[in-house]
Amino acid sequence: MHPTPPPLSSYVASWAPGPVAAEDALPVGPVVALSAVLDLPEAVAKDGEPLPPLWHWLYFLHWPAQRELGADGHPRNGHFLPPIPHRQPYAQGEEGYPGAVVHGPLLALLMLELVRRHAPARRVASLSYRLRRPLFAGERLVTSGTPSGGGADLRIATHREARHATAEVTFA
Image (cartoon, rainbow, N blue to C red):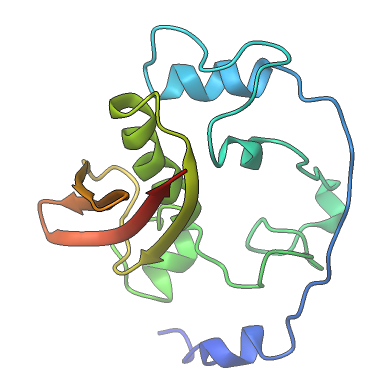
């Protein structure tokens, strides 16, 4: 049996990342790759075209050398990433989860993808999302939404939970 892990607060109590600014060209490769993952008939943006909301998360990634990684695979001294391990061995062995936890911002991106596909002429002005229950790698999910005033209410569900993530989007 493993010793009791420290409380979450001990990981994030002193974590306060400052801003980072970077400029770079946005090659189309990551857009093509995510478009393929989402089984789209073609890339959602071509070279020089605006990206859909949140797709900028595919860029400005830092790839540290192996020697700079901690035991959980994240940078040992991560800037924007709090030092909380959610890889499969940790998730199963330490937290008792059935598998690796799906990255929460991916769920936000999937909820906005629903808006992009079903309201392509609408421009998103704001997004507010909340991660409610963990979703695990390999689980089938359903993204759904309903119009609400000047926007939409969105959610992600699985067979075991009606609301893993929820979001409210407003249109410009």
